[in-house]
View 1: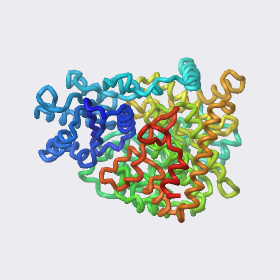
View 2: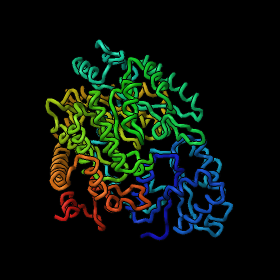
View 3: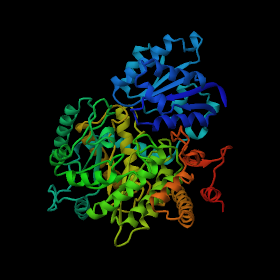
View 4: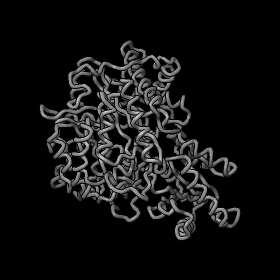
Length: 614
């Protein structure tokens, strides 16, 4: 390991956004640097660092690990971000913890929203290295002064497909034609906007009118005052409903809504999001949302009862369930992994009785934590088949692109196609699948004009996952272009939807006249797809053959704990899941693969057979 720079990553525990932090940590590890990621005790102490015991805990962690580069991350409210960081910064400087005063810290860095970065730069006279978002992996490493000879050359390779999409998207944005996009014909069916409205009704109507995709977006204001936050959100909902651009309102509920619904929140930090805490508040949103459909995330406990409550109060368009996630595993809740899985399976049994679709909110959560592309595919398939076996009749298959953001476009297509193909093989007269595509969470630039181009370019890729199917993708989750800078308001949400619809229309027209390549026939993409599909299919067969009762909570628990689904970025400081975190992954030829200590790719079948001892 390189002994000149030792990186320590910290974040206030209330901020659950860890993807960028782990991506950066992995890049540094790939460059042969030592990286320490603080555990929950350290991160919790950051929230009240002025308490002497908390400061002493953080200081000891820095000294004991010989941290030279202290990397602070906070992507919520800029004012809170500045307060958290500056308190720690001043205490460490005053305590002679910097290299200039005999301490070990050479560099402070802060990653957060641009407004927070600007404040911190000003308050520290530019002595803190700031990462406002949108930096490429190469740019991030260069900011830290990593020598070019230690950086993987793959990070700087240009890709013809990605360049083509960028050039195309740039023309779409520069033309400003997207500003003339109007609402799609999605509202002409008899149940639309009534208490009997359903996603399936809207899907079938939109398909009959050749006006797909159904559009969903996820949003919510940040306001520490709960009453004011709800009032503001309800005004947003009314504005979005009147625009008729949005089909599915996805409520950006707060962490406390998910973890402490209906409880006393006195003294608890909300952490951003819409702070809904009663069935009545959900009902009000539902009424204001019509004729939009409404969905929201499940909770981190009492999952079956929350599913019923969401059904009763929202007539929820579909239920989103996380299976392995949103529990003690990722710090989002108190449920153990097995408890969480049991609650999810029970919730699905209830959802089946309603006839509503289920969205397994699964594959990208593995990708957030460093999983390889095969694990992304397999986790999505396992969740889908479990839903089918439990009686679900319609599945929403979410495919998050640009995760990690330095994945090559052709690999993103191959990964999405392989997963879609495997899950579609489950279809029959009793089980159907709708593909929902979206941009990656960590993808957008802080330059808003550039972010608009990124949104359009990623939208083009969504259409290339299944390019010869005029109905695909059936659902687009529009991620708003301002995400790297600030939360999207209704104006930005509507503009993001228009950009998405305009890019889809223009890209399809260009393909039809042959001015862009038809990626259905791209040799590289098809070769990658076949490789991923074959490897994943054989791996699934091994699991089904050797894991008793695979499609049960206990089966899913074993698949995770035995290390079949590697998550090297998982914050497992108590070492509860050593087999899940023991495998290394890295970007290889544009995609994520499991590697050995020498950087060589480990085939999934060989790895599974080793785990199974066969």
